[in-house]
Image 1: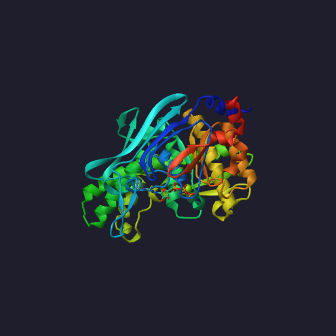
Image 2: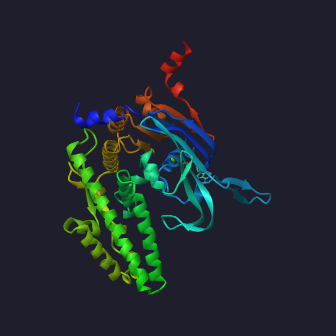
Image 3: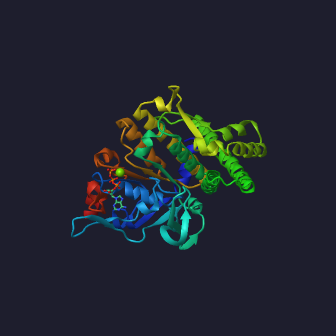
Length: 421
Ligand SMILES: Nc1ncnc2c1ncn2[C@@H]1O[C@H](COP(=O)(O)OP(=O)(O)OP(=O)(O)O)[C@@H](O)[C@H]1O
Ligand SMILES: [Mg+2]
């Protein structure tokens, strides 16, 4: 066993993951309670039964808007009603909540998140305005920054929407990159949210034609300082992942090379941070009017990255659908191992329809790796037979009629025989 493997196996002797999950008025669930093991958890059921909703609920145990990136208002349970006149309307409960007992290296904590009504309109990190905000409690205490959650649980997700990650616009790639940074730097989430908030304020000021120079300059100064910190953290993360993949290439999933593509990140290649901050301030100043025509100013809000399939020397966007999925798996496996070593506890994987596009060898290899690494992985599928090979090692939940049934015993006949005797 090499050093890396023995360090990972030391950490994985202690359990980290969700032990109990309770949802209240969360999308299609009026109330749901699951007891989970520290194994792969296969969630199966028909289309529209509520599999992804469970993964999304767990993803709210990390900062931000969850794995679908939605507005808080979309999550509360919509109950359709047909009136006497035949018209369709919806009733919605006032609140939704996700409560989870999580283990962090065998230590139990309760994480809870819900929405709270506010007296005045608030703006979330993405600029959506509403009279609601998400609150987070850890062991019963309300906390002011969501990034605190990162000390107790670390989540890595892969969704079908990400199948287009390498081909579409840069925003989802940037969020993917920033989520990888959060795991190493809890403050990164807050920095990105603060930068976006300042950027919107700056943009609005310019758009409204308010030539308040003093105010614009003060915003630019803060944006430049935050922007340089964001760019530096992204550079560090990409370098860390590239060197990890170089040293520990996977035996099945293709090695990747990640290249950051951002103006501020590039400036940091050649200049000290203070100088880049100054350059960034000037850049924002000269772009004040230009943003009106162009929609956005250059800077960390435009950063992108490119992924290469190393062996094929091919940019990811030119790889096949299955190859692109394998590249993504390769990145998240490297990220998962790397952050386990860094944080000292294992992440939880949320793998929505992960079997799609992977051939039998790759699917089987991925499951084998998850079992070996002892990560808790929540995996959704419409076809549980694809997971037959781990049926002795996984927990199986069937989702139907807005409820979830633990069918692990039925699926593991050997287990039922043991309990029968
Ligand atoms: N706010 C809401 N209130 C009530 N129901 C909702 C709400 N949002 C989504 N739903 C419903 O939840 C159901 C389950 O959605 P989900 O995406 O979890 O399904 P799924 O099992 O992952 O399906 P698929 O196999 O197609 O991916 C859908 O029928 C959807 O209409
Ligand atoms: Mg789904």
